[in-house]
Image (cartoon, rainbow, N blue to C red; front, top):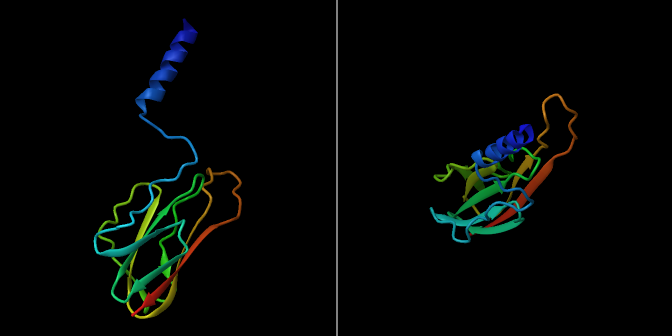
Length: 139
């Protein structure tokens, strides 16, 4: 009887917590038509983008398994590629959003990094996951 109660309690706990997807699949990719006045969207899988002056770029970064969220993406040249408020910046857990506007012709790099998610009080490996995308802006 004791084993039956343990099995039933375990089943109840597993089903009461809802659905949980276990695996190595990534989250949904950004849309090829990002909308909200964005000319393009990039994710952690992209490493280059091209914009015209005045166009906006959305950055959507998904945290990998075992990693903390990405830091806020930054532009290497804010006079060429300036950060702007992203009107769709309500992200789900594990997703970092940013938006940039092309201000002048040239090149800029957007960078971000993520560190390992380590349990409190446990040894933690000393490495970073680094992301960069080169953005070319034409007139």
